[in-house]
Length: 209
Ligand code: B1M
Image (cartoon, rainbow, N blue to C red):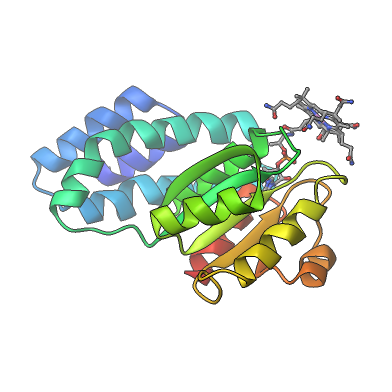
């Protein structure tokens, strides 16, 4: 098995220490940082994402795989930057105003990172103007909104309207999700996309950037 296959396997099993060591080994073998990212780390994360969508693995497995991904990225990130490998996009994510639920939002953030985006986490209970401020500061190409309460879903509409009225209009795509959110609601408020789960959110963001 190649070092990259070993890395992908270790990531899928959530073996963070092994993933870190295998990234070091791959770099030692002279592999390009971009190749290590795409064919090692992201390849493993893509498999986890697909299995999660098919309900073959659950939230804990995704979280430990994401932790292993982070361990690998901690070593790889400076090499990627030095090699001029850019993230495919920048995503600001947050749970909307009035809503404190963050487990799903965090999972979405990890999957977006796993898909090759830089993720800026705006946190929970985030007001529309805060989303705009963080998106402007970070040069975001995607804003990801999470809501778990029927009462806070309406805050998503406020963000869509605030973005449309700002200088970000036409420059960022807004994606939404969370247990009570639906495609019909997405269409109603004019967001750019809805995803039912974290892996689908990563696919959606990739297709939009
Ligand atoms: Co809350 N809560 N909660 N809660 N809570 C729910 C959501 C609820 C359904 C429970 C129930 O009554 N059966 C209910 C909402 C009812 C409704 O409005 N329809 C509810 C309520 C009412 C409340 C309070 C109002 C309770 C109270 O105080 N009376 C209160 C509200 C506080 C507030 O936010 N202002 C409250 C508080 C809390 C805790 C603080 C105790 C805790 C949150 C802890 C935390 O997040 N750090 C909590 C929890 C844990 C839950 C449940 C049990 C679990 C939510 C969760 O984390 N799921 C939940 C009931 C349930 O779902 N069984 C419930 C796991 C997570 C991985 O899934 O977040 O759905 P989820 O994310 C998924 C997808 O939805 C999607 O991807 C994720 C992974 O696949 N997704 C996106 C999420 N965001 C996305 C964004 C995207 C794309 C996909 O694009 C950007």
